[in-house]
Each structure stands twice: as C-alpha cells, then as structure tokens.
Amino acid sequence: MKNTDSVISFINKTPKSELHLHIEGSLEPELMFKLSKRNKIEIPFKSVDEIRSAYNFTNLDSFLKIYYEGSNVLITEEDFFDLTWEYILRCKNDNIVHTEIFFDPQSHTSRGINFSDIVNGIYKALTKANNEFRITSKIIMCFLRHLDEESCFAILKEAVNHKDKIIGVGLDSSEKGNPPKKFKRLFEEAIKEGFLTVAHAGEEGPPEYIWDSLNLLKVKRIDHGVQCLKDDKLVNNLKENNIPLTVCPLSNIKLRVFDKLENHNLKKMLDAGLRVMVNSDDPAYFGGYLNTNLIETSKALNLSLDEVKILIQNSFKSSFLDEKSKNFWLNKI
Ligand code: ADE
Ligand code: ZN
Image (cartoon, rainbow, N blue to C red; front, side, top):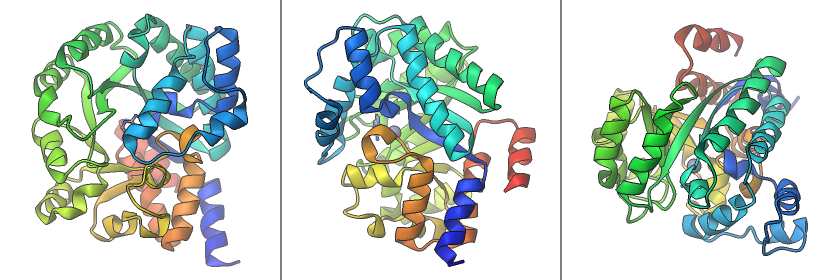
C-alpha cells in the first residue's frame, strides 16, 4: 500500500471531531431548492446546477453575499431541523463522532424568524443524532461582526434564554474593518452569562485581530488564525498557551486566502508546534466535508500518517467535551 493510501484509509476509518462548521454553510443546493419551493421563497437560480455554478468567490465578502442569500430559504423550525439532520448524515458518513456547530441567528431574526425556532430545530436534530448514532455535539452562536454592538446585545439576550442548548458564542462574517475591539463589552457580558468564547480572526485580517481576540474577547479558540505566522511573538504566545486554531483548508482556497492547497501554511503551523486541526467551515460552498478536507490537504502538503494523527488528536483535545470523553476518543486514535 502506498503511503498516501494508508493515510486516506486512516482518515476514513478514524473517529473524528469537527470544531468549525457553520450550519448554514452546510445548506446543499438540493435542499436550498427544495426549501425555496416549500416556503415559496424566490431565489435567483433556476436549477441546482445554476446554484453550484454561482459558487465562484474572490474573497470572504463575495462568498458572504451568496451565503446570506442562500440562508433566506430557512424559515421554520422544521427547516433548521432538516438542515442540521443532513449535516449529521454527512458526519455519520465521515465518521465524525463529535461536532461543534456555529449558527448565525442575526441573519434569520432580521427576516422575522423566531430565535427559538432556529435553536430548537438545530437542537432537535442534534438530540436525534445522539440517540440514533451516538454523535455528540455543542452549539455555538455567532455574532455577525458587520452589525453594530446594539444588535449583538439584543441577540445575546435571546441566547440567555437558551443556555441549556448553547455552550458558547463566536464572532464571524466580514473580518476586515470589523476588529475584535468593537465587541469587547459584548464578550464581557457573554462571559458573565457563562458562555465560552471563540472568534474568527486572522482569516483575512491581520495578526493584531488574533491578539485582540485573545486579550479583549478572552477566546478559548481562534477560528482560522492562518495569518498568525506573520508575527513570531504571536506564534510563541499561541504555542505557550496551547491556543487551538481551527483551520479550514478548502475554505481558504475557495476564498483565495492561499492560491492553491500546495501553498497552504497548515504544515508550517504544525511544524511551528501550534495546536491546529482541519475543519470544513461551509462545506456545501467550498467543495467538501471533513474527510475531503483532510484527504486533499494531506495529499497537497504530503502529510505523514503521524501528522494526520496529530491533527485529529488536536481536534478532540481542543473540543468543549469533558476530559473523560476527550480521553476516551484520544485512546481510539
Ligand atoms: N461565515 C460563514 N463562513 C465564514 C467564514 N469563513 N468567515 C467568516 N464568516 C463566515
Ligand atoms: Zn467560519
């Protein structure tokens, strides 16, 4: 067996965890089409193929425009259930045993959708996933950083009523020009309410946004963080404090953070001793779920079996699972 074959086989059969997945980014064109009909919502596409061929992005903002438009077909609790259940079936297929998913309530409540319908739809699918497949999960609510503090405080108030289902809060959407310091007070309040915090930082934005996410937003993980290698002091800090970086390789190629997978800096991050792992971000838009991300990246960067093992171990170590569950899965790898 060739080395690459044994790496692929290892990826396919090993239990895995995913820590960076936007549930709205798992909306496949087929379901988008079905929901647009079910809810009588017009979308600017005549067919599933037409939707797919619109997925040519030049940067994060060009993607976000299509992503928010796509989300418009999500209306009822049942829609959020169906969306999440489809992702769970992908998890089962990829042997993902634990997943921590983001959702973007402000992109729905701004259209008049009930916060409870969103959370309950997602939560019911995740409960069914646990009952039927033993897949465990956590839900993280993201604030849209292009919106103002007031709108984010209002959505935090809604989340407080669902603390039993939401473990933490994150920060996503358009990064450049929307620095972490804009949300310092919001994150302080979220922490007071008992939420864990994470933030997208250093996807397109500068290392300074990673520093500020750590120092001002007190995040437990940095989502993406690939720009950290531009700042040696930051790399040392991330390493010393074992801060996880939830890297999403196929996303970074589709959004042109790197020109091709062969030039992705994941291996350099691994070599620098950073706690990195691989995730799919918005798999319906970026060409693949977790196993595809791991396989394509391993091939492009010529990763060894040991390096792939470290990536998968890092994902469990960096999760919000309790220590007993982490150790259970780490022993299986
Ligand atoms: N929302 C969904 N995907 C995102 C990404 N990759 N970066 C920022 N916000 C997002
Ligand atoms: Zn993301």
